[in-house]
Every structure is written in structure tokens, then in C-alpha cells.
Amino acid sequence: MARLLALAALFLALGAPPPILVTLGPQQTVQTINVKMGVHTRLTDEVEEWKIKKTLEMVRAMSAPWIVDYFPWGYIEATEGQYDWSHADQVVDHAQRQGLTMIARLGFVPNWARPKDSTINYLDESRYAYFAQFVAAFAEHFKGRVRYLVIWNEPNLNFEWGYRGVDAAGYTRLLQAVYARAKQANPDIQILAGALAPTLATPGSTDAMSDLEYLQKMYDAGARDYFDALSAHAYGWQDSADAPPAPQRVNFRRTELLRDIMVQNGDAAKKILITEGGWNDHPRWTKAVSPAQRIEYTLRAYDLARQWEWLDAIALWAFRYPFPAQTYQDYFTFVTPEFDAKPIYFEVQKYAR
Image (cartoon, rainbow, N blue to C red):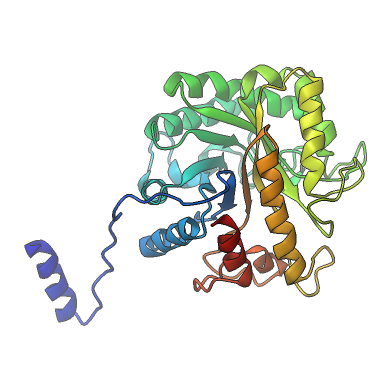
């Protein structure tokens, strides 16, 4: 206490406001009727700890027990072999204290692990072992705190695969490099594969591959033994949550088609976790719905998830951004950067209670 008072006196003498003291606070639990509900919190670039804590308090108060967040390899291991866990620890520890279950998405290649002038998503196969080492270090560091790891994001998109050309077999080899190392570091860790973008790309497209085709190619390449569950992205676009799935349509129930592929490949015992998804209510975006429709479809999606015994969690995009995107993306959120809850926040909260 004496040290804190001395620091406060120093800041006053310098004419600067004292720093905000943030504590974890008492252990909380999530009260909800739907234990599968979740959101993608996007705290990656939130630098102020009090805002991390407040975000996660609001998620808990909305009665959503699951969250997904992004932990960039390049942020944590900016220098080869030197790990800075400080920000990641803040996010994970505050999530735990609020009673939330964390799904961690891993990716973002540091400068030292990729060629000059390549993108953050470029990971040459000769460098897979470096990423596997990072995943193992992450699994060990967060043992008992984080159980679910998503390996990469939307690798069926050319952009997300470093503009190397979409390659399901290459992604499968990445899973093979990661899986044993992660399990050795933490036998309880659950490796989530996929995080596939729902897309209607035609065969042979250079920009993307259909998520359905990509998943089957993963199985063809031997992926089955190298992941514990499938991460899926389930965006509704302008369809309702109940709209039936079809290979040539992007909607929420497209996830059922991914499930069918798993069953056809003898993988019915594995679960799916939706780690992105939802609807957008921008007034001018071509794939948006009205605010009232967004609320209706979101509540129905959460309810459908309760009925799918093969689904463990549904974390919709995105709870809050640290700063405005200044695009249609801002209309995916439940809460503004200033922590003003949107109507959808209160309707989800009412539903969950």
C-alpha cells in the first residue's frame, strides 16, 4: 500500500494522472440457460487492461460462457525463442476470473519466420516446425487455463494462406507438425482444425476453395488423426437461421454439411465448435439484414445450437472492437468501442436468462 501511495504522489507531483489499478476481482460464474453460447471477443489489439476486464465482464453479464480470441504468434514470439506472455496472460486470466471458457486462435507469422516482403499469413513448409514449437509452448504455458486451440484461420482462402495457393494437403501437413508437439506439451489440449471460410468458390479458383471441398481434401490427405474437433465459421448472410443448407448457398446451417462430411469419413465422434458466425445489420451492405432480423436470427441460431448434439459451442462474431473499423464490419458487433451495449446485447441477455 505504501508503494502505491508513493507512486500516486509521484504522478501528482509530475502533473500526470495515476495509472488505473486493475485487479482480477472475485471469481465469477456465468448464469445461462444455454451453455453453448459464445462470442468472439477480439481483444488482440486492446492495450488497456481495464478495457479487457470490462469487455469480459460484459460477456459474462450477457450470459455467454464461451469466448474465442486471437493470440498472434508474431506478438508473443517477436524474437525467435523469446516469449512475451504478458498481454495473453491478461486476457486469459481475466476470462477465467469471469467464468468464461477460452478458445484460442493461433496464427500470424513473425518477421523472423518468413521471407522478406511476405504477408503475415505466409508460412513456408520448411518453417512448420517453428510454428509447432510455438503451439507447444502456448499449450504448456496455458496448461489448466486454455484447453482449445484453433490452428490457423480460414486456410481455404488464398489471402489467409499467404497467397501461396490454397492447399488442403499442405494445411494437413501443418496439423501433423503441430499435433504431436502440442499433445506432448499438454495432453489435455484439444486441437481444432479448419476454421474454414464458408465460400462458394468454383473448382480451380485461385482465390479460394469451397469449405466443403477443402474439408474432404483434408480427409483425403490424412487429417483425421491430427485434430480433435472441427472449427467452423457459420455466417448467415441474408438467410434466416432456419434456412435449409445447400452446397451452393452460404447460410448458418451450412455447418450441417460440414458435419455430413465428417460422418461420411468415419469421424462422427468428433464435435464441431463454431468459432465465427452471425449476421450483420449495416444499412447498405449487400449481405446485411435489418436490426430486428439480426436479433431474431441470432437468438434462433443459439437455440439451434442447443439442439445439435454434435456441436459444443457457438461463438459469434464479434462482441466488440477496440476501435471502430469504419466499415460495415462495425455492424457485426454487440457492443461499441465505448462499451455502449446495442439492442442485440440486451435481447441475447434476456434470452439467455
